[in-house]
Length: 337
Ligand code: NAD
Ligand code: WQD
Image (tube, rainbow, N blue to C red; front, side, top):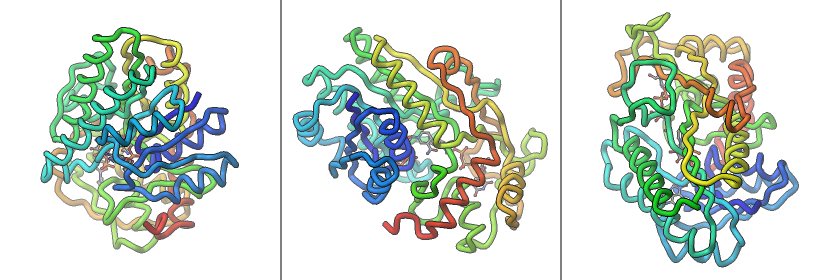
């Protein structure tokens, strides 16, 4: 298949591009480089020996998206493009609603004009909101706690309504848990702008000496060691989940939702210890108050993806920590964007 990857130069998009190319698909990326570098796809080409063309443009612009479909015969779309910083979304909600919802709606408008019916969407475990019951199943109630999360929730709603209006469309909504790590080569990885918000990139920058120490946000949660528990998934497992999803979607009609997680919760201190052991490094940390908006525990029931997509995460926490550091240590300035 020829697959359009919106946001394809980003962290998850570039790893998925590599995985699709290695599986024999063709890819084309549309990215405005708001949070990424063209170097990521250049390295994907280097690793695969195949072309990963990048069109620099905005997915909210109907003329731009139309011109991509005119230029390439697109069979399916994986829609990664979006703004993703939770804290920033609270400060700039309109930017998030405008970018993330317009991008989704623009694709929905343009795709049928070119007979393209298959779309895989980057949703998030954040749509489960403050559910207490774990593990989280796809049929659990949803609801969000910040504008970023609502853009995912509303995009899921829009895609569901659009697919109901035209039952020949095939949309797969993937709810990712916490992607970490990097391709084993250390050539592509996560390249956050400024001080990282997320745990693993923060730990990597402490390990490299860029940041002084980790702040562990709260040790008074009702968890085994008091720190927050999450379902961390290797980004290459996640990428392989997209390959399974796109191949499933191409033979399917209607809307399907899948969690992409391991089903295993790890605490912040588990991650610190695993990182130290995997890489033979010390991560200094202090316990600080909880981060506003954080929940205690969040992990997936991955059964539906296993049964229907025949996909499951394979890489363990040691591999995730090793590969995250391997990328950071060889690319201390990321892609240098
Ligand atoms: P990323 O920022 O690395 O990638 C997103 C890409 O989209 C970037 O390259 C950015 O430049 C591009 N982009 C943003 N708006 C665009 C627009 N209007 N037009 C064209 N390109 C645009 O983020 P990521 O971690 O790779 O995440 C990919 C997707 O997965 C996002 O939608 C994100 O919300 C979602 N997601 C990420 C996580 C996570 O923890 N990384 C978890 C759940 C869901
Ligand atoms: C993980 C754990 C923190 C940083 C976010 C988004 C979510 C999804 C994935 C996109 C928590 C703790 C963190 C630090 C810490 N993204 N922590 N010190 O919050 O689970 O999820 O990214 O959809 O929507 O909310 O991920 O990596 O920020 O935090 O103690 O410096 O690490 O409290 O328990 P989170 P995270």
